[in-house]
Image (cartoon, rainbow, N blue to C red):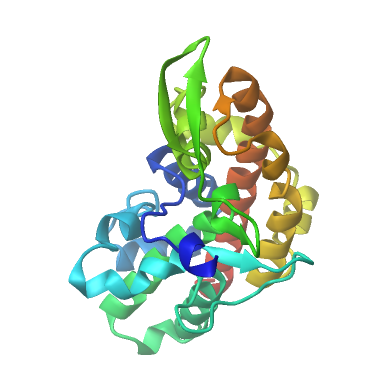
Length: 252
């Protein structure tokens, strides 16, 4: 089962999801942190590199990162690491540990580890990228019907990653981020509390409802999207706040 679920075809949020997460994070960066980060990113914002890992994971140089885009929990919804391949949580922790001493590192090392954080904090919040030990998350459904046309067969993974978003949210990244980023400082403090492992387990508790929402071979259409979208938006919002928190601590 583990080998099946660690399929290299798995992608996290599509462009819309990753860039919205990064825009929310950017909106919550301290000016001093933003200035340092953008210096290492060649004067680009973090939104520019939000999807970079998906674009480079299939190149020989970065093939070793392919398995990092997911993280697994056990039957009790506790973090269950992939010790050999690594995962999103371990890769985030490694990047954070390196960047604690970023001033002593080569600029290229700092830049690539920032890019890892930009992407992987987002991926670990995608419902399809929280893997549940012993559960099948690698099945196909028919997506579409009603307002959503044409009907297409695809993996449920793809529905969560991008199809549900693309069928319902046609705003720009900045517009979507503005609509979502409305929590109070007190609420944000509660959301960002804890460690990446804590965040994964929090995500797992919230995202386990996905197994009640579809089954292999189902036709998932507007009713599914109506139910899934609030969860998707919560996960995107939490990822944005948590990404900003990590970056603000590292580059204060």
